[in-house]
Amino acid sequence: MSQRWFIGLSSGSGLSGVDAALVRAEGIGLEMALHVERFLHQPYPRDVRDLLRDAASGAPTPVRTVALLHRVLGESFAVAVRLLAEDAKFDLRQVLCVGCSGHTLWHETDCRYPMTLTIGLASAVAERTGLTTLADPRGQDLVAGGQGGPLTPLADWLLFRDRS
Image (cartoon, rainbow, N blue to C red; front, side, top):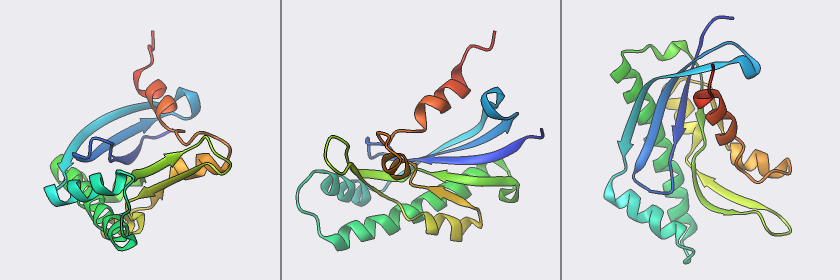
């Protein structure tokens, strides 16, 4: 099977910014090999970090502020994709899709209705880059009965397993 290209986006709990990775995949299933070809960290401006910290604190946050963050993060993710492609001198038309896990503001699984709130408008990524954008894997895993962390174990195994 020929190689495929993906871009992965992540915004971690450190609130420092968005990480973007250009990944080349070869093979399929458990025989797939992933190669990180280029990586970029795009810092958030201080005001965005402050708003994220406040929104995640558990203190009351106006819905308007959460909606603003949702949009601003989506635009930030899109900028990171474009900067990554520019830095790698890579044509975005070669990318199969973008994986955008968003930024988790709230995650609670030990309750009657496990819940998560992840922001970062994936539609902004799709619109600004022209790429198919997959989003909210945490939410999908929760409603399927998981704990909302479906990606890390498989990605770690595919990227870091001992192939000898």
